[in-house]
Image 1 (tube, rainbow, N blue to C red):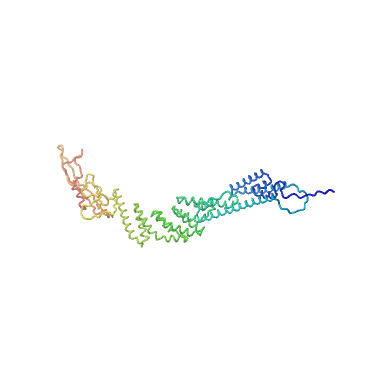
Image 2 (image 1 turned 30 degrees about the vertical axis):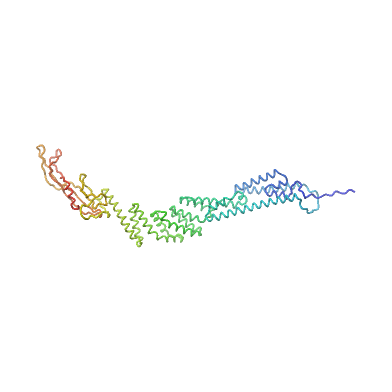
Length: 499
């Protein structure tokens, strides 16, 4: 009797073609082609790594673009399905119905499964660690950024690398936006020109990733330093409205700005700023209270401006500013000093006006006082500024002032010409008798006190010596009427009234 052959169950201790189906599928699910390695498909394994690398590089280089994620997902599905198909084909058809008996996998199969599972664990761990690292870096940078320390924030964000992008794209994108905003902020804070800094700070404030709440007060400070008061205080009000937590910083900006006015600006610039600031109405307390506290400094700034104008020889402006101080702050402790200084300034204004009139030859028509001039008093001679003296006449010693500060008088001499008739004189020339009618030389004289601008003497005077020994007649004019001449003694005697 021949025994019937009995079908044996397939040997499940060794994979038919070197690859266990579970291990192959899990190995390919790693996207590294490990399942192909189990099946000894070396080319497919290399292609798998290359395809995964291309997708990963695409994700790393183009964060925010969804297409590479779609490609990677489809690539993963294709590799898993392909691994299943290849592993199923490698196992061959079933040998027939066999009672199921649980059999532990043999050594090679077990090691393949362990290897595939290990790679999966390593990959997942790497992904989780990189993801946590990226989120931690972005979170730490965010804290530094919010505190205004963009140097530290930028250094932290610079540690993000493409690996972080692949596993934590959203966090990396947030980090890149914050890094861009920090770059704008650092550029703004590095500007020496306050106007340029304020402009860049506005760019930062408009950036969607801006996180430093102190940027508003900082921009206001730069605007105020640039002299743009309207925009500066407008920024402060905007900050109070948008970021109420910055109220202390807003107050500090106003206090610092007002306290440093005298250091940053000239006295008159500080005064103009003061007047603009104190004329504001309807400000919130964070602005109004520091301004009110600064009110005590305004009188000193008005006085300082007047002194600055006086030193710059802007004397008329200086006098008006002193007058403003006396009108507005009549009970201030510096009133007496201000009056004295204004008196000196007004004296200097008079000196300028008088000197202009003297040098411009208009004084005799429109006399002006100069109270800094010496008084017309005491014994003669009295030094004077002279007008109308003939060029051939020499002033007696001590009569002429060397400058305006020596002159007691301004003497205006006007040559009227022919005065009263004096005498008719006869002359003989070549046996011909000639006659000449001589008249006095008439002058109008006015002497003004330079200190008061008022006339101390005003009169007319006639001088002349008729019938000189020689007289030269013009041809054809045998009976001329002429004005007498006068010697120096007669000429200077006209001024005996005040000299």
